[in-house]
Image (cartoon, rainbow, N blue to C red; front, side, top):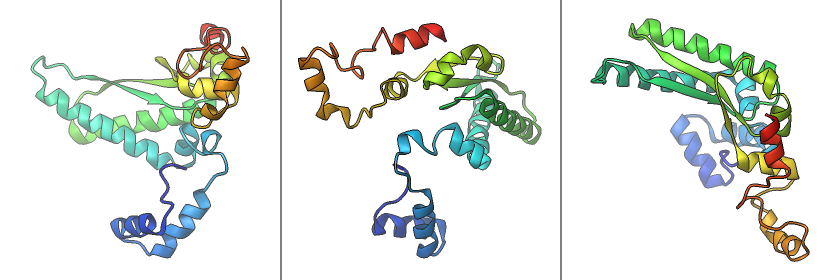
Length: 194
């Protein structure tokens, strides 16, 4: 995973910053290592497993919104938009939306301010496109993550595809790099379905 320390120096730095033993960081990094992080423990999956991550991020957004609202010349609080990433199933969105709503209520009580916000999802999986009607029952907005949607639709990594995409284009399999220009027939169709 790109956010996990990999080298001994990185692990030592994290251990020092977190004031924990280096062996603990080594063990945790080994526990979190994945063979395919693109399709692994990230996005909403990480937040479902560790709801404190979602709570911490939502709290940061709501506290910033509370401060911005107090200093706003219009007197109106800003409308925060919180987007839950990599959702494939309605239950994922429901679980995390509740964490977000509970956190908003805590910040509202602590700060004594009105918080305006919307909870939506990043549609970046083919299943999310096909289930968009269901997800829309809980999501107040959608944003389309076309890089991840392209990766999961084609089953290829944007970081690795450059090694063979020129041959695909030369052989007429693809007219252009789907990470440079949206594939209208496949990825575009999924977006239209959503």
